[in-house]
Image (cartoon, rainbow, N blue to C red; front, side, top):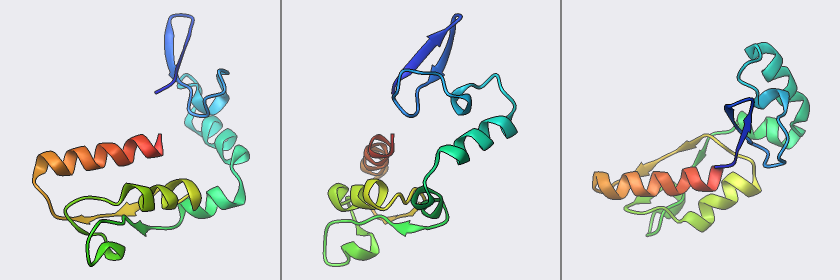
Length: 110
């Protein structure tokens, strides 16, 4: 995770540009931050916010997300390629594997 330190405070550098954008500045009101963020988003990104995809998994029913591990390459295409950031999961695995798989998705999204 990229962070910026300004006046002793830490900020997430969400767009990785090394500059504190208004939407990254937690000191500003939520409305100001939201307006700035929406103004920076493409129509494709805005549409992606309204979509709910299904995580892909390995196995016979992978397109439905049923399995014990995500197909990270296929799911990355949904996140990065289609700008979909709300995903349903039907993964069926032990809690340790499930947590590791979800952490991998978070890394892709970040």
